[in-house]
Length: 283
Image 1 (cartoon, rainbow, N blue to C red):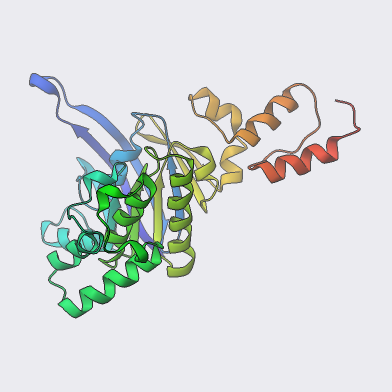
Image 2: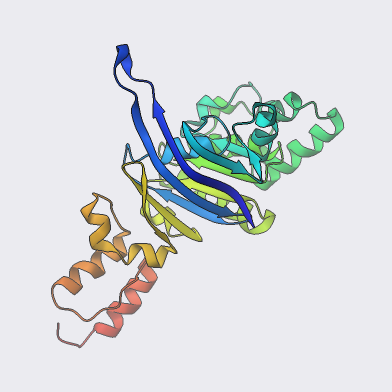
């Protein structure tokens, strides 16, 4: 069942000082199924973050249509319902934290939705437990690490009970430990709660975790498929200045030197297994 649909979407930002509008999306069509985990990739300026903001009506298409569970984002009367269904987590968690106490911050969204106090209490507790931050409910957000802040920002979205969470490069400002914490949280929400996840990232090892990868370039979809299908197209991705996972890159270089190795290697474990089979065989 399609939960998010983009139909031939175009979008342009207004140009500065009377300049021509800047076209960012050029006829993008995609479908994301309910409960799916999709990674959206592309270099800076490819249109991926602009596309993400269309999924919760933060931006509206210049042409084409975007639907959320059948709701047209162009219908202004549906805007708040769409944003209740699709939560957006931004790159810098400090831009989404609004209160001086963690649990008050998580309660902010449900309060604005007019949720009853006793239900807010339950949602806040459940959301903090879902991101493993319940023990920090009385802490000040500014004292937390980057990864912890991002998990609190995610909890604030969860408390609004969305069907889908769109994350726009949520780990870009985090250290490796913070990245790991946030990625574990995202996977847990997808697997255990069935929340549809759209992850915008420039880290290839994060994209490997998704059910499906969509690669954008110059405002269009370049390629899409499972991580194994997409990252098997090493030459295509490199042609468009895009990286591949490190394990995929190593195998690609060894194959270029004449070594007999399989395509579609995605992680260190698969790489090690392939190299183990190769041991003792001449390249």
